[in-house]
Length: 144
Figure 1 (tube, rainbow, N blue to C red):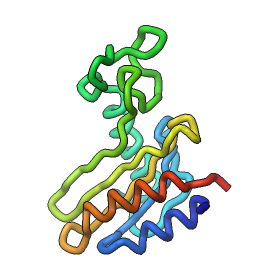
Figure 2 (cartoon, one colour):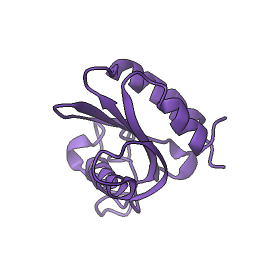
Figure 3 (cartoon, one colour):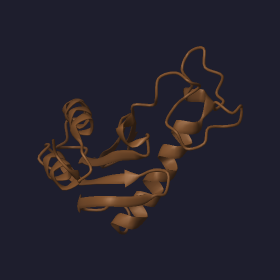
Figure 4 (tube, helix red, strand yellow):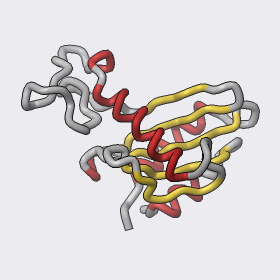
C-alpha cells in the first residue's frame, strides 16, 4: 500500500499530470505535494482546494437522496464529507481553460479529512483515466 509520497509520484505518471497534492481539507494543509502548484505555491493551492472541498461537502445541494442536509446533531455539516447521512461526496472536477482539477476524497480510513488533488493539462490529460486511477490510489493510500 502506498504512502503519501508514493501516491503522489504514481499520480504524476498519468498523462498530462501537472501537479498533485494530498490535502487535509479540514485544515487546508498540504501533507505532500509534487509538480507545479496551480496558484502561487503548494500551501496556497492546498488552502484554496480545501475551501472548495468543504463548500461542496457541506452544501445541501449535494445531499444524498432522502438526506436532510443536516449533520447528526441537527446543525449544518461539521467538516465531514457526508451529505445528509447518505453517501459521501466522492470527487469534484473543476474545468478551466487549460486544465482539469480532480479532487478525490479519501475514504473513511482517515475520518474523511483528506483528499487527493490532481491537476491535469487539458490538452494532454485523460480525465476518465485519471478518475479511475485516483480512485484506486485513494483506496490504497496509507499514512506512513
